[in-house]
Amino acid sequence: MGSNTFLVSVILLFVGTLAAVVTLKSQGRSVETNKIVPLPQIGGMALRRGPWPGCLGLEASKCVDIVTSYAPKVEIEVITLEMAEEVADDFNPNRVRIYLDEDGLVAQIPLRGR
Image (cartoon, rainbow, N blue to C red):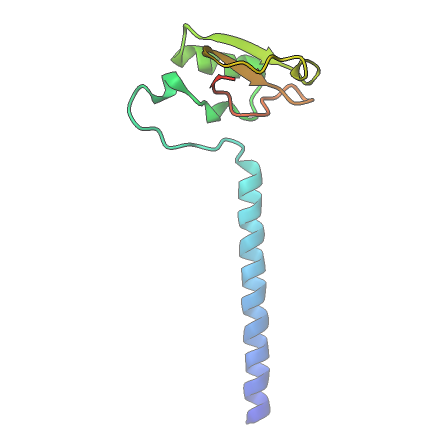
């Protein structure tokens, strides 16, 4: 009787561990596929001020369209990896810089000023 209880306990432990691993792996994949990270927005003016997390992982032109649709008067600078070292470290609230990765996709969430 004692060995049967032990065997059942080991089997349940194995099945539980296997279920946990499968669940964690499936959650990991969903996180990898979701490049857009929604931030809570309060009020209708929030997207006009930024940041624009929906741009993360998009092509530069699509991100420019998103930003200008919410903030048409803002100056937009698209910064490639080669240009990143030459960018001045000043703050301008009327400017949005869009930083691209080596594939030409938006690498950082665009925001005003920097």
